Structures are given as structure tokens and as C-alpha cells.
Image (cartoon, rainbow, N blue to C red; front, side):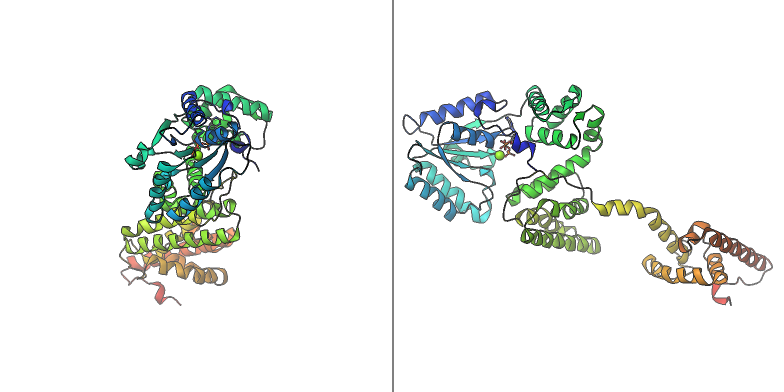
Length: 446
Ligand SMILES: Nc1ncnc2c1ncn2[C@@H]1O[C@H](COP(=O)(O)OP(=O)(O)OP(=O)(O)O)[C@@H](O)[C@H]1O
Ligand SMILES: [Mg+2]
């Protein structure tokens, strides 16, 4: 499915919403190349996500008839690769003789770091100094780049798109898609997006899944499922990340516990990744994260958390060898639904286990852990279904109630009978006890 974000990505500069100032500065700089080589050979478009930086760069190149070469975050940008790609670009000249210039577009420059890529940034700096071609750089956080690097660039800031502009774009998409939408609903999406047009368009698309009308009520999921939407966003950010840092950042900024995020990642990995080898590598990372989380729990060694976190974010993100340009409908982890459904059952199992142990923590009845007690439950189930008298004796001894007994026996009537027989046995025991005789315990039965 083509995402609306892709479908409605502006192809022309004049269709880009907001940031008129930034676009004007960019065009001015690009035009200046027609007269000669300007002092600043690179321009750095920077600003928050979803504001049109990447879109603008490509629209500009197309519009001015410049050929372009891209170096995306999906390519690892080591010194060798930077040298080869930029080197070839400047040597060969343009492939198409009618085109005037070749522009180099390097996205997510702030993502070039780490030991290996560090040389890449230095190489890039060298090329900027000597380049005969315009270079467009894009970054979210320019302050993550060294100062000398920034100084070589003309800086152009993209700002968050204001709500009225976001609203206009949403309305236009609705009319193109034949959707009638309550204006208040669209306003809510716009406010919610906080100036990120990409996320606003994504929200609109998910709200209108399978219908042609959007009412204010529909936006409930935006607020009610706010935390869920946030985890959807975390998923997208991890799966789409092209650098370790971005993936780790997504997890860091998520408000969910690592255990929860891991469940979400495991559930949604096959929805996002298509290539079997990407999937295999992804699951491998997930399983490693899971091992570390298990060790943390057993040893209470929180120092291991960083490994779990890295595997489930950076590990999963780097497992893909290509980018998946699609909009995925992420799913709520099935395991959580199963947990919710079986909660009652698990609670009863716990309560029976505690009753087998006896009074809290004194182990007056059976000395052993709850886990050990639970391991007896299958045997008890066999007894309960085959020997009602013994079942009643056990129920009496461990003070099981009707709910506990029903856990073993499906037939309510039989469960009831066992329960009443157990009560009889209990009162007999109490009678014996009050007569001063030794309390009869289960071990003395039969
Ligand atoms: N100013 C805009 N005008 C119209 N559409 C926009 C604009 N900004 C973003 N969009 C929509 O959002 C999508 C993503 O935009 P784009 O990739 O240009 O954002 P970006 O600023 O590069 O974000 P990031 O920092 O996350 O890379 C576009 O395909 C388009 O549908
Ligand atoms: Mg971008």
C-alpha cells in the first residue's frame, strides 16, 4: 500500500507547505551556482522531523534541472564510501549533457558518527572545501555536528509547521481521497502533530482506515490510545531507523518499559520486514535482548540493561539490509491479550499454590516455592477428576474454596459436591480438635 505520506509528497517547491523563508534562502543559494561557485558550497537544511527537509531538497534539484546523487543514511558512510561516491560524482560530470549541474544530497548527516563513520565526516568536510558541485546536507540536530563542519555550510532552519498550515494540508488530502471529515477532528490531529506534518498525515490515514467519514469521536483513539500511538511511533522509529543512534534514541524517548517495547517489536517485526534474511537477523537480535532481560531479572543486575536495549533497538534496526518505504499497520502484541484473558486463571493458580504452602510464608503445610506448588496442579487435576473423596480431603486440608475446586473440575455440579463434602470433613476435624484430640492431617487420611 502506498502511504499517504509518499502519495502526497510534494514534487514541486511551490507545493511544499510552510517554511517560505527557508525555501527562499535555499533557492537563492542554488541559483547562485549558475553564476559561479559561491563561498559556501554546502547548505545544511536542519530542523525537526516531518517538516519537509528531504522533500524540499529533491524538489529543488528536480526543479532547477539539476541531476542529483544521493548518499542516504541507509548507505554506511565510511571514508571510503564518501570518497568513492563524491569523488566519482565530481570527476564524471553530469551524465545528462543537457543538465547543468549535479547536486549531491546527503540526508541525515547528524547520523554519521561512530568509530567507522567518523572518517566519513572528515572526508565529507574535505570534499565540501574542494567541491565544484552544490552539496545539500540534511540534519535534525545540526548541533550534533562539529563546529568547523557547520562553519563550512550555509545554515537553513526548517521550523515546525504551524497548525493552520497542517490543517490545510489535511483538508486537501481529505478532498482528494473523497473523505468527509469533521473540521474539529482535523484540528485535533493538527494540534496533536505538534508541527510534524508527516505524523499528522499518518494519523489521518490511520483514522480513515476503511471509512470515508471522520467524526470527532473517531479522534478518541488519538487521545485515549495516545500511549498506544506513541508506541506505534516508537515502532516506526526503530524499524525505519538507519543509524544505531536514531534507533536507540527512539527507545530512550519511549515511555514504555523495555519489556513492553520488546513484545511490540517481536509482534511487529514480520509486519515491517519482508526479506527473510532481514527477519532472521531481526529475530536474532530480539532473542538476544530477551536473554539479557532474563538475566537482569534473575540476577537483578541492571548494568545489563544497556545490552538488552541496544539489541532491541539498534540491533533490530540494523538487521535490515534495505529500507522498507511503506506504511505498516502495527499490531497490539497478542501475548498481552493472552495475558489479559488468562489473568483470572493465573490468579487462581497463585492462590491455590499459596494455600498449598499454608499460612503466608510459614510453609506450615508444604515446604516449597510457589513454583513447586504449581507443578503439583496437574496431578491434583487428575485426582479431582477421578477420586472425589480424595479430592474432598485435599480441598478440606488446604481450605480450597469453590472457585479453586472449579479450576480443576469443569463440571460445576461435581465441583459443588466436592466442596460440600470438603466442608463436612473440615467440620469433623474441627470437632475432633475441640475434643482435645490431635488434629488429623491429610497425611493421616486413608
Ligand atoms: N512542508 C511540507 N509540505 C508538504 N508535505 C510535507 C511537508 N513536510 C512534510 N510533508 C509530508 O511528510 C513527509 C515527510 O517529509 P520529509 O521526509 O520531507 O520530512 P523531513 O523534514 O525530511 O523529516 P525527517 O527529519 O524525519 O527526515 C512527506 O512525504 C510529505 O508527505
Ligand atoms: Mg528527511
